[in-house]
Image (cartoon, rainbow, N blue to C red; front, side, top):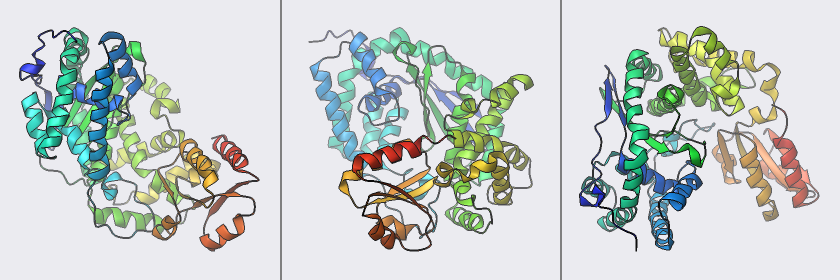
Length: 461
């Protein structure tokens, strides 16, 4: 039995810290250091339900917070409940048929799922009672009570960590973010992106950034993401607000992009389709990321001296870890900056200039097969090729990857990747039909096809 150390968490508990706020004409930024947000974030990470490094948080618990078998049972309970919410809660949307896959999550309902609503309840709750009330607005009381009981199980020991280290790691940084945003004009920059993307937002739209304490001694891989108007941001011990501000604005601009009117997005696809450059589809596929990356670059411009910025931008991995996104973000940011000053927007006068800028920046790399397959449909008939299919998805970068024959009719213009064992290709090509852009990876055996996938995946950028 674990000792109870009298942590205030079970008393009603985890009183939320007041956020550091910065208010503008269109937006209000709030930077939050919350014990309960950190704990629910860690539980999702350890359960494998987020992009965060769950192994790092598990190491913290095992080495310093007395993990035992009951903790395994409680985490399994959490995972089971949260998986039900992830799998069963996404809202079905009535969306038009489109020849190209739209490049934003909102089209597919991914910003409306029950999973996100439950995550946000944990982020926003200021006490356990408040957490229970917020959960009961989105799930049945039985589920809400079960989630609360898991958090109560872990709460006292997490309170030890929070009091000893976690709060001190992130609370001063919340104030540091707010000060930096005010001093460097970052909120004003973000508000110009609201106009640029035509995001449909309420006046003085609130955006919450939840700072997650991530001890460096358990690894240095961190993440930040946007969940509607809420953003968890992992912070290492030594990281400063300057180190993460470009990242969180990048994620925020994705949120703005999602909130543009559906009709504008559909018209933008048709505008891209009407352009003449052969690389217009992959350029469109990466557009959302290119615009968000351009936003991050413009933040860095405001944080760095001229010479330091030039050095920083010269290294693509500083800009973004994925090379195509880095290249397109650097290509797009001067054009985006001009548009922010007036005269054009994402849906007015931007597409043609952006596609031209992509061609200039990439040069002959616009013909690289990985770029061409930024959006793709993978098909196979042989079940033995499922490993090859998984390898292709994991190793060849993309914005939209779909698997299955039914996707061909859904997206008639999208390139096709065909995996086949020798002797199967003729029938498969007949099923695909004429006129499609098809990449064929074929071998005498399933293992040979896997080797072909590896060779394709390692083609130089």
